Length: 252
Image 1 (tube, rainbow, N blue to C red):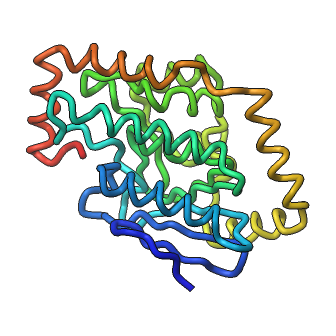
Image 2 (image 1 turned 90 degrees about the vertical axis):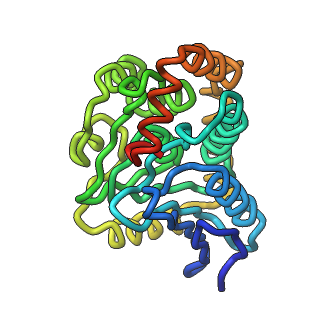
């Protein structure tokens, strides 16, 4: 059975309790534009309401898992609702009553790193890589830094962002950015689902609620993130660089 979801996602229910959402715009490296953000948010909402659903899996087609937030096409104010939508999506993935899983078997860059990191479990395939590229564009990874830091620790997240470091699948597993590195993502997902089936679903939901109570999201983070990005975009050179790179097809 397929759940209704707008393009650019393919959303399917597998064997219960799995709902799978596949980012399916390989031509744009599965960027987080307005359509993708609307589709992802809608798919998660539908999955949470689906009878018997317990696990929400994100994966992608093509060579990229996700190339991040579409900033290059934004006008002076158009990026604000998009960044706000990304912030809310990451928070939803972390706080969802479903277990959220990212299966990354391609390049995750910029906001794509945050999309994976916000999930409860990250499986990194042989083609997976992670890179926060914002400083190369004159920006800061203001929206995604907290979810990356929650996995890697604060200084490690800062260091990865500062150097725009390329992180392989093996390195991601070593530093906690991924929970498993595997040559067979399907098999690893099957093993994870088997472990989750053995757990009491009510206890899993309670554990997720308790985690958020124990480690709450930074207060006022959304407003601070918007201010940080606004400060960078106030620099005309940064804005022009983004537009130029977008026209050249080098950024989403």
